[in-house]
Length: 462
Ligand code: NAI
Image 1 (cartoon, rainbow, N blue to C red):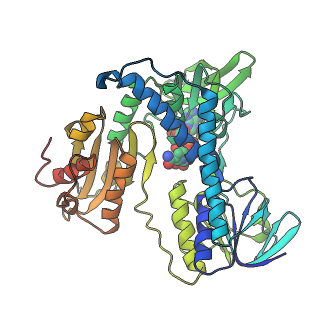
Image 2 (cartoon, helix red, strand yellow):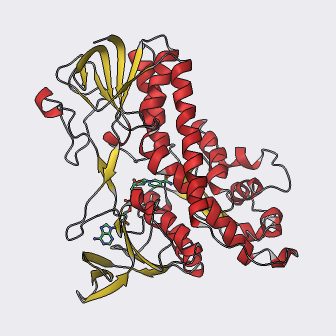
Image 3 (tube, rainbow, N blue to C red):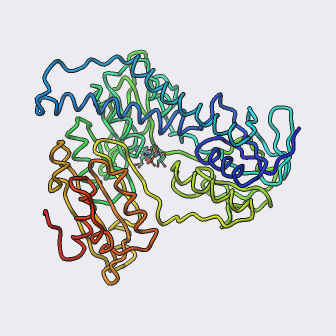
């Protein structure tokens, strides 16, 4: 048994970042993690390994699509799946070891095992009960289940199983056209799998800007992904020969089936708080299973805080990280800050998709007067030079004040470009502020400036 100022439960991006910040602020900190390695879902079986596969498969796609155009001749490379998997595993290993190093550097105690909270101020790990003045729940989320679908992580998989398939399947049905479905679907499509995405709604990536949704679906279709929209999956039957997916079209209730070697269930995630003992402690929960918190990330039980996917808000690693740093500041008696209006979302397909702030649909619904500045990557010399002319930047600004309200990008480097707009929004900037900022030529970021110019007197290259 040991005494700590803070015990963080969970070492995902929310938890480990929070633990580091707590330690930096002079608090005696421990972090509980039951996995063999630190980093949580994101680092072990989520964001990072998927990015390795997205990168490798994108490189392969480039060799097929664009190499000859640049005078790079020769046979297209063959895929060695085992080697690609070990590249992915290495990337994960380097990062998890990096966090272990940071824990040692910051003198954070890693309590190995699964934690529970027997009483306020206590965390039990294995047979040991440790005490802490503050406890931070950062236990993340798990894949939601779908009625009629039994996940075996072999041929009916979540994102976790999809990252470690023993071979590249001939066919895959992806249930759900959200972020996971499209990222993993495009990996396998580029590797030669016949991918069909079945989506309940009429548009992909729910909540995204409508124009982006349309262009994104068109570009993914061009890459070979097939879409069945407005279709509710009813169940999956697994036999030795493969999987049969049954779905019902919402427009006429007609039923149809699809055969696939592998089925990826990507219909969302839910908070993971099992085994913490929250019910016994009387910790209040939200209707959808999240831990209820106040403005300082504290639950109704004094000294117990919660962050990340376990609480309300977008299930994004960077949102969890921000909350992790903010709650550490609060526990250390400082001011914690998260601007929930400026949290970017990125989909790491090719092209990338990124957004921040309000969508046009949201502004319409709010009855807000706004203007749109849009610029296509076709007008960006750098993008055209490297065959990345698809997509656009769209900036939404207040009609009266010109203040930037949102930005939606589909195109090369979108996930990096969006941050210029995030900073602008954080500072309450007008579109004109972006337009008047000198942008280096030739860069993709000029497309952001051009979209900002289009909010005023007009873009130059459109
Ligand atoms: P999601 O919520 O993004 O999308 C799920 C989709 O499944 C929705 O479009 C929904 O309409 C559809 N769906 C639900 N039931 C269905 C049914 N019976 N038949 C057909 N379609 C159905 O969930 P996803 O993609 O699983 O991601 C989970 C979480 O992980 C999200 O919150 C996401 O933000 C996060 N994530 C973020 C990443 C990133 O930032 N790049 C990468 C991966 C995950």
